[in-house]
Amino acid sequence: MESVYGIGANWGTQSSHQLPPATVVKMLTDNGIQKVKLFDSDYDTLRALGKSGIEVMVGIPNDMLANIASSMKAADKWVSKNVTDHINNNNVNIRYVAVGNEPFLSTYNGTFLKSTFPALQNIQAALIKAGLATNVKVTVPQNADVYESATGVPSGGDFRADIHDYMFQITKFLNDNGSPFTVNIYPFISLYLSPDFPVEYAFFDGNATPLNDGGTSYTNMFDANYDTLVWALQKNGFTNMAIIVGEIGWPSDGDRNANNQYAQRFMQGFMTRIAGNKGTPLRPGPVDAYLFSLIDEDEKSIQPGNFERHWGVFFYDGQPKYALNLGTNNSGALVPASDVKYLQRKWCVMKNSAKLDDPSIAQSVSYACALGDCTSLGYGTSCGDLDARGNISYAFNSYYQKNDQADQACKFPNVSMVTKEDPSTKTCRFEIMIEPYFGGADRLTGSIRRKLVGMVLFLVLVMYV
Image (cartoon, rainbow, N blue to C red):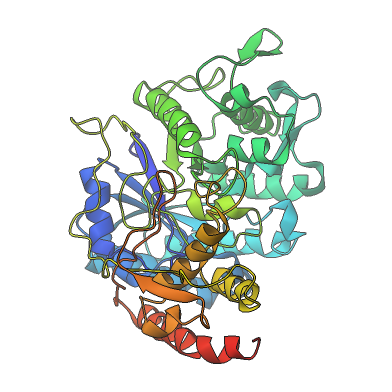
């Protein structure tokens, strides 16, 4: 099976307000993105991808692995509903099934160790039964923490000792079935986790002090990390196994190193290499990769960090964050989403007459941030320069917009008001939400739920004043 090279994109949907799938598919097409990786198998999303020609990787979430691992019937049903039906009836170009998503991540403490391989076997068997296994390949997107180097250089690479047997088993199965090894590589995370990490080594400009590995020179972390995997595969007998970079990206907010300047520098550096078919020292040919990610997701877990909601090359409304030449169209610029429908131009802010020492402020902000999104507030973020009143207004507005500008969602007792004057600053964007997309029952229910949450706001907060 020949996969298209060129750049792909991850299309995540953990958002309170999603763009309509048809709008996103047009965005992908307009930007010359020929491959998309999904984290589930949402019907509306897949149907919208029909007839687009875009190559699709559908995903099975980790919480479904145990059921599919224990039941061949469940695997057959999943493939029939989420692969066969879409290929035959909706003309969707499904080429991969991602079984789980980083299931061996060390922070999962082994939760999915026992279920991943049997689930993989059952999905492969179901694809064979359905007559699809030649054109649709299974894979397991892994975090780069599944391999390591005891020597600190790529040639020391091998699978992580505590999961070596599991990794060998899965990798052999994938290799035997002509399937690729999929890995997610994130130089940003290394920088985020370690203040001693050399910043220049995260980028592709060649400014970092080179790492020497027996005469092979590495000037950036991506090359070194990728080749550590190549060495791990070679040591375990999989010398020529295809590799897909399932996720690679840089967030634009939520941390002092997450900003548009660094994101643009990293993404453009990577895209220039992709466009030039420049691989790594051990694999110098084209790299098969999916950018992470296409669009911001305001309901992603922020347990790893506030930056998690800001990986998109585009904002939640499909507008580009920074200049990026994907090398896929004549303009050399990102093409924004078209015909986006916004709510009214109004914002919820702190009332002019309200005092900062009002006892209800702290509880109101806490409530707004818990149910809104305040990840752009804080040290080194895009809204880090706001004063106290600005921070409070940002929190109120986030909650208000997320609840579709419902009147009740701007009734923080005696401290909030609706304004038609844009409170945005040069660096801090006070959002206006897009109209909710009612494509399916889940989203409709979600919108009603948000409205109900807004309706009880007053009652909840009154208890604290």
